[in-house]
Image 1 (cartoon, rainbow, N blue to C red):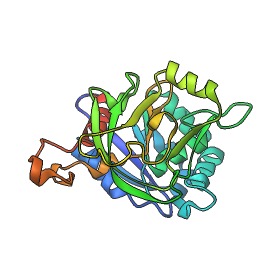
Image 2 (image 1 turned 60 degrees about the vertical axis):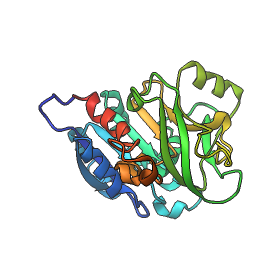
Image 3 (image 1 turned 135 degrees about the horizontal axis):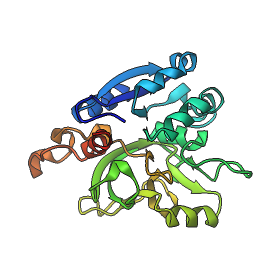
Image 4 (image 1 turned 90 degrees about the vertical axis):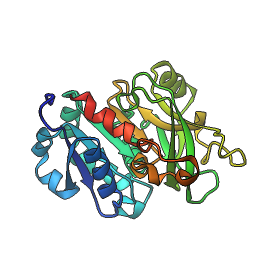
Length: 259
């Protein structure tokens, strides 16, 4: 782990179709870290470079055009070509964050919820509306386990996805996630959106974010990197400027974990 006097380094993984990498890097650097943007092909060629980083982040976008299914191709690459490297990274006590498309990749690669003899225990699929949704949502932080959500109770972030509906294989999976305190974020009804359904995609348990059983791997559908500055808030002119955007706390917690 990094010491208090060293800079925490995040590896922002890129692939064809990734389009939120720069915003995510800005968020980590605003929180006090340092970022490098690494293409998936470069990481496959030199997986040992992961040893130089404390955080691996899979940002949002449409990796490989979301062909087949959202995040499926990059998830397969990570599983088949980088399984040992990412597993070692995780086992070293480091952090992994997946945002939107990154969440889809973490789920479908098995790094967030490991596969078993029946395959994946859960997935992210098409919204109930059958279309892309782009709006702001109110969220409640539920997990005491998740490193990224320390001291966060409620948060207001934008979403932008077509395949964000969380579906578990069966009730046993849901019971396990609840018992292990892994349901990190859920959609809630906020005072500013009473006319809009709280759950935008039909996710089971209104789930918007999930962590692994260590709390160090976190995937979420909302985009915290899009609410870093107070002026990102859609009502900042009416409600006044906050000290920072709600999403910044997620990145600050990641940096603070190593300090």
